[in-house]
Amino acid sequence: MVLSRRKFLTLVSQTAVMLGLSSLFPKLAAAGTPPIEALRQLITSDPRTSRTIMWQSRVPLEDCQLQYRDSQGTLQHKPAIINSLQEDRVTNYYYTVYLKDLTPGTTYSYRIWQGNDVSGWQEFTTPPADINEFSALIFCDSQCGRTYASWGDNFRTVWQRHPEAQFFAINGDIVDNGQQEWHWHNFFAAVEGDLPAHLFVPVMGNHECYSLIWRPCRPRRYELSYNLPPNGNPALQNYYYSYDYGPVHFIVLNTQMLELAGIFPDLLVQQKAWLRQDVKQHRNKWQVVLMHKDILAYDEFQVNSKTLMGISDVGYAFMPLFEELGIDLVLTGHMHTYRNRGHIFKYAPASQGPVYLMSGPIGNQQYKVPEDKRFDKSAIYQPTPPNYLLLEASQERLTVTCLTAAGDLVEKIEI
Ligand SMILES: [Fe+2]
Image 1 (tube, helix red, strand yellow):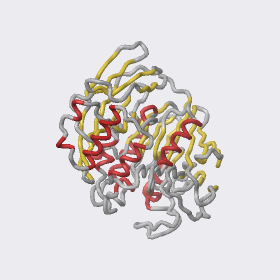
Image 2 (cartoon, rainbow, N blue to C red; image 1 turned 135 degrees about the vertical axis):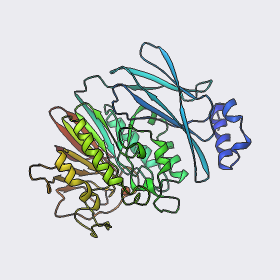
Image 3 (cartoon, rainbow, N blue to C red; image 1 turned 60 degrees about the vertical axis):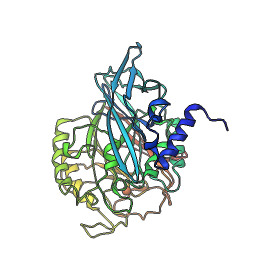
Image 4 (spheres, rainbow, N blue to C red; image 1 turned 90 degrees about the vertical axis):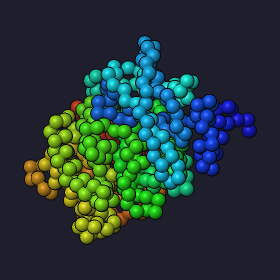
């Protein structure tokens, strides 16, 4: 096998990192073509005029910047904000550039520049000023064991099937362990060539909050990996946030009250106050919540309500507020199966209640999940194959289609 110069340098530097020798090769990053990893576009509060671009390296890259140009070819550059984190005996460097004042409906090319081109040109297109309709992909539980190859294969297959989708979300448990380098590295490596082309909406799950010894921990790697709209809680940046996409206001919530109880005991109280305010300020045609843990327990013991079935602790925490605020649709995951519970309203008599759908996994962790005869309106067969949701929205209608990664239709629902 003949190695290109770039692949050779990448291999040498990765080997040095693996052997803990990176400090012995200080010139590697400056002299050769330094390896950048996990180039990604992240959601902003208004994707018509802004975009966040992030990337990583395992050696510090000085003077690393983003170059971008619009269809007129005007070249601009912006320096990156750099953070670093050492966990699991590896130091990762995180680079963020926030692009603002972009023109709606315009295709931009971008690349990472450090004296030479270290990423190759990538592209993104901002949506038009008036987004009348759009579609998006909702994945969940991309966490994998042994290998992330199936996650990468599913990601590519689904995007080939829906090239018109405007963005994708991963509704929590993006990786299996929040501190383990192997999981983070392989999650990104499995989609390395495809990720820079797609706008990513991350949602924190409980697995992002597990330490190397599987104890709840502060999800520092998640905090640094995803710089998200700063419209949530400044003290909990990247934990919860919202964004608009045409007729839909998306609200990304954090359901890790259990895992984060010792670190952020006010997570629920503060989040509920913010949610009230956020929905009041952003009233679109449709209000859609993305959150990881489900509103039902499905045989998972609930610490507060001491139950294995019926409404979960997360359900008790949020369902009354969803009804009060007129949320239309709540998309969850965590249980690694698809369930449609239709409209549920229990607390606000005037409310129709949101439609509650649970989906996933898109990774390789497949389980059997018991039915909840009281609430389940429809379910997928067991054990659940990898599946995802296609969300299609316009002013007139909001539809969600569940498909397996293999392409079989599970169910199409109009909200
Ligand atoms: Fe989970």
